[in-house]
Length: 263
Ligand code: SAM
Image 1 (cartoon, protein in one colour):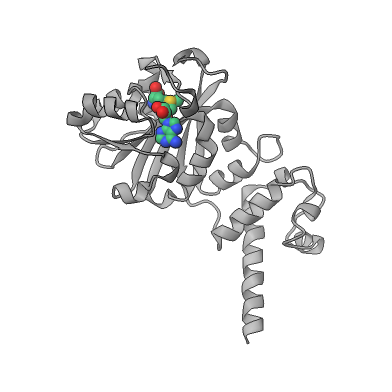
Image 2 (cartoon, rainbow, N blue to C red; image 1 turned 180 degrees about the vertical axis):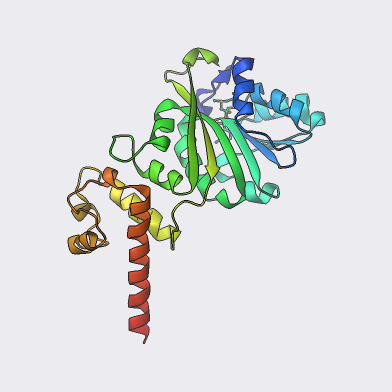
């Protein structure tokens, strides 16, 4: 069966590389393992050599059926569905280990979907398009630093592990790839995650504007200054911890205002 472009199918053809990716997961055989997008089973087969049970989430019905036939009696549980709506926390008791050579066309929404379920996740190892991996790991100040960097770094330790060239895949993608490890970590205390997410989203939807303008719906320039933030800076210049402090200040301010008006 020909690879399906709409599902971002680029199959790993290098078993040494597949083993290296799995090693990065530091498998704990006592914890459930999920593979995202097993495809033709390049990682699946190796994982099953080390595990008695493996969950795999695959959208392609033909590939899912083939995987079930081949590995069903070796402990593979195939969830033939769209991973973007898959309930990981409901599928097995956490903490979970998640691995995958991700379909690049959905990697950003998928990462946000996983962030929503981080409470049941122990660690994740993913192959991603290099540009996305660079954005996840980016430090403040550069062009790669953005909403994805802040949202992931606020809740995970990010390790950018190694690069993979197009020739490791069949068919080869037009882009370079990178393997990363994300480990949920305490990060800065955030009082209201929804407000934090909204502030970060608003800030980065106006990257070229100064913070004074980008965030004027939330806070005046004097308020930014009182927090030690230069209102003339751009959104990509603020550290993750500063976004957390800003959102926490807004949370406190809203709560105080709520109490005052209710009194
Ligand atoms: N793991 C295999 C490998 O390394 O050879 C395949 C990786 S391929 C880049 C991505 C896989 O994700 C494909 O098998 C594709 O069918 C699957 N996929 C694409 N979109 C998906 C979705 N929304 N939900 C679940 N699986 C998806």
